[in-house]
Length: 462
Image (cartoon, rainbow, N blue to C red):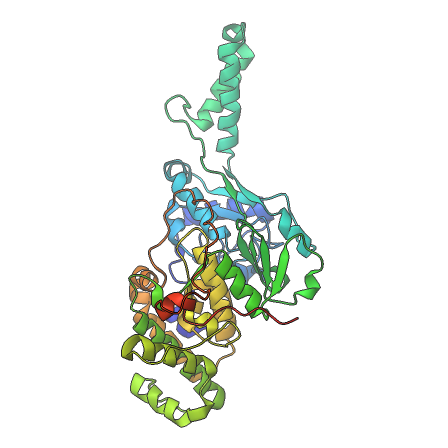
C-alpha cells in the first residue's frame, strides 16, 4: 500500500494534528468517548476524527466505530469536511458528516476555536445482530457537544432565561439569577451570539453497508429492493425483495424499471469513446496479470500487442466494449449485449439524481475490472482487491490513477459520471419509464433508441 500512500491515493487529504493544544483537545474528546488516550504527538485524522496512526497504536482500527453502527466523531476544525472517511461501514456516513459540518460552519468554527466537538451519528439500532435490523435504519441524528459541554450548558441557560422571562417571580428569584450568571460565564451571551446546531437529522432510505457481506438497500423507489453481494440466502426472510449479485437479469431489470442507469454511449456531454478505451485497457491489464504476460510500460501500443497475443482468449468484457467502440467511432455493426453478458454492466453509468452515487457504487462492484471507477466509487473494495494483485498490475493502476484522476478529481468525475449533485433536498423519485430505453420498439427507430446498447433485458427462465 506504500505506493498508493506516496501518490496520495490512500490516506490522502487527511488533516494533520501536530500542535500540543490540538493533541490535548483530541485526547480529552477521545477519553470521553472511549476511555482511552493516545501518546502520539503528531498524527492525521479523517472527517470523523479517526486516525490510522492512533488506530495502530491502540490496536483497534474501529476505536470510533466499535459495532459498525452509530459512528462516533471528533471535530478539531471545520476543515475536516474535505477529508475522506476511512473504514466506512455505511455509504451515508461521510455525506451526513459533511452536510452537518457545512450547515453549522460558523457555530463549529466558534466551538472548535476553544475546544473539540465530539458526538455520534445516532440511530435506534446499536448492534446489527441480524440482516432484518437493516430495515430499522431509517434516519440518523447527529448528536454533538464540546468536551466542556458548552452546548448542553447553553441549552440549560436558554431554559433558565425562558423561566426568568415568563415566571411572575423570575425577576426576584436570586437563586435563578445566580445560576444564569454562572452558566453565562462558560456558555457566553446567548442573546448576542446564540450557538444552536442546525441540520442534525438526516433520512437514510437508501445506502450501502459493509455488513453481511455487503448489501445495497434501495427504499425510495416504488418497489424497495436489497441487493446482496454476499450470500443472499444467508440473509433470511426480509420485508423487501432481495436479489443476489449473481441475479444479473433481476438487477438489470430493477435499474431499468426505476430509470437508475443509462448507456454510456447515450450520456450527454461525455466522450464515450475515450471512456470505453480506458475500460478496455484496464480489462487487458487484468487479463495479462492473470496469465502472467509482460505488458512492458503498459502503453496503449503495448496493450494492443497483448490483445493480439490473447486472440480468441480475450475476455468477453473486452470484446463487448470493442464492438461498442467500433459502433461509436467507425459505424460498425450494432452489438447485442444483453444482461447475461459479462460486459453488460461495463456499458452503464448511473443517471443523474439523488441515487447517482449509490448506483455508481453498485455498478463498480458489478464491473470490478474497471479499476478507475472502482477506485472512485468503492474505495473499500478497491483497497481490498489491490492487496491481492501482482506487482506489475499495482504499478500500472497506481500510475494511471495518479496521472488521469489525482491531478483533476472533479473534472474526471464530471467526465465519467456527469455534474456533481447539489446540496439541496433531493427531488422526488423519478416516475417509471413508459417505455424505458431498454424495451423493444418499432424497427424504424435508431438502434440505440430501440433497445439500448445491450438488447432487451431478458426474463430468467423458471
